[in-house]
Amino acid sequence: MKNTLSSISFFVAICIIAYIFYSNYRAHVLWTDNDVEKRITVGQITSFNTNNSNKHRVTYQFTVNDEVFVSYHTIREYLTTQSRDSVKACVGKKFQVLFILKDPGYSELLIGEPVAKGTPAPPGNGWSVEYVRLGFKDWEPIR
Image (cartoon, rainbow, N blue to C red; front, side, top):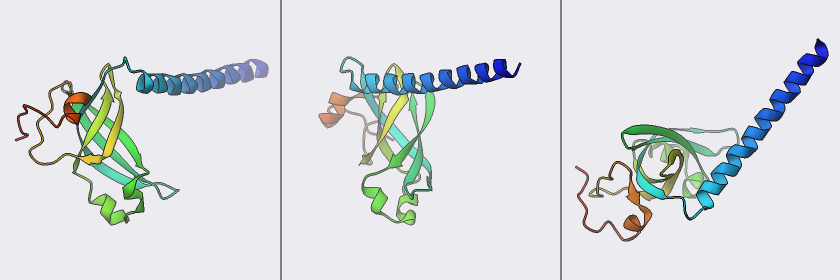
């Protein structure tokens, strides 16, 4: 009986490790495959905390096709050098979010791309990356 339990525990552990490797591999493939469509939308920082290694981590949410997604971003860029109060002031601010169209759960907060007033409202499935790079030609402003 004890052997059976340890065999089952070992098998479960191997399955969990395999799933983690598969998930990381799948994410890498999706982000690096040029045939996978990536889009941009507006996301809002909803909260932040500082982890044990003093890195600031923000929670953000965004909407794609009327479905709300919540994700996390560890800030390794400019805001890492800022005080806790400066980063906390970002709560409620809007930034661009890059996501995989066929699976918006894969997203990245573009912390260096704040959304300015007058930025066009994104369509339900977000903007194409090219549209954003071209500077929002023929757009309707966010009201």
